[in-house]
Amino acid sequence: MHIGILTGGGDAPGLNAVIRAVVVRALAGGHRVTGFLRGWKGVLENDAVDLDRDAVRGIHTQGGTILFSSRTNPGKVEDGYQRMLDNLKAAGVDCLVAVGGEDTLGVALKLSRMGMMVVGVPKTIDNDLSATDCTFGFDTAINRVMDALDELRTTAMSHERIMVVEIMGRHAGWMALYGGLAGGAHVILTPEREFETDQVCEVLKRRFAAGRRYAVVAVAEGAMDPQLARHVYHSSERDAFGHVQLGTGIGIGEVLKNEIADRTGIETRHVVLGHLQRGGAPSAFDRILGTRLGVKAVETAEAGETGKIVVLRGTSIKTADLEEAVGTLNTVPLDLCELADLFSDKG
Ligand code: F6P
Image 1: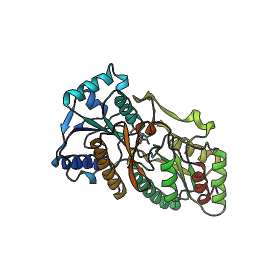
Image 2 (image 1 turned 180 degrees about the horizontal axis):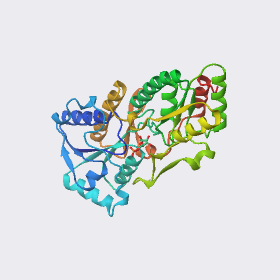
Image 3 (image 1 turned 135 degrees about the vertical axis):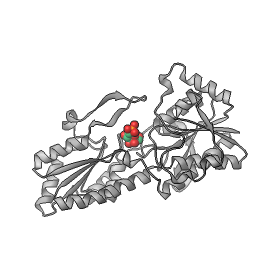
Image 4 (image 1 turned 90 degrees about the vertical axis):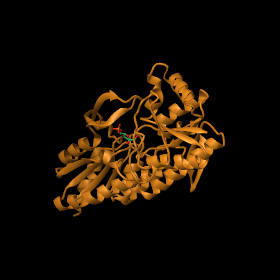
């Protein structure tokens, strides 16, 4: 069998572990692997490399993706889908393994409905795909958040300041919640629950009045106080899938910092963790999860199953329908948000 593989969307630690596992397992099964470069762009432009054992030796320890990534949307290219099908056919690819988030997997689903054999591998540091219990990349990212909060706490204490830390997560607050809980943030704000800045300020003032003269506020980039929305500014450009480009302009972290400083009179600073959360070496958990998912993707292809996604359910790797992966988002349930309140000064 000839297997194609691509990585699309924002990179996530563990991508290289998936690529390596697909290649190692495919070669063991007597198959051949081609890597398409820069996500769907590589399939549209027939830009691909042969992946042999040497090409993937040791790469599971490295962050990023050796196949590069992009947010190319074939739906925005004339005859994009047909071009991709023609190119895959001409290259003799029997099955395409698409590693990506909601957008990449949405394209994979369309291709599979057009007759291409496709297996999806879910990926996002945001952990917001409902088909799987956990996405690879998330564990590394929340460890980065935890480390950052641990470090910011000591400088906040020394200067008796409030630190507002903006954490990735457009629609789901998993990273702010888990990173914030692990790193002991005093206030955690997620997109799932609108917040009131006055209430946050009350909590902070109470904390300072009680003699705990520093605080760390973890805010997800998609969290919002509707009263502040007009101050948040992002580039008017959208990515090819129509998403607002958060992380450009003035985000909620900076706006909230200004409001807290004005309303409480307490010295406040903000930090946008940004792409530090995504870069660098994956954790052991993400290396193993990526490896297991990559192996299962090849086994799924060998079994002739198409339109599937490989997922973590409990401690087992299973398959699910691709439709499931692009259906509903996995957002933080209310009881978990309330658990965070218990350990924060909001509780
Ligand atoms: O989807 C993953 C993610 O890291 C989001 O958390 C974040 O909003 C977005 O990608 C950033 O995208 P870009 O790398 O294009 O700035």
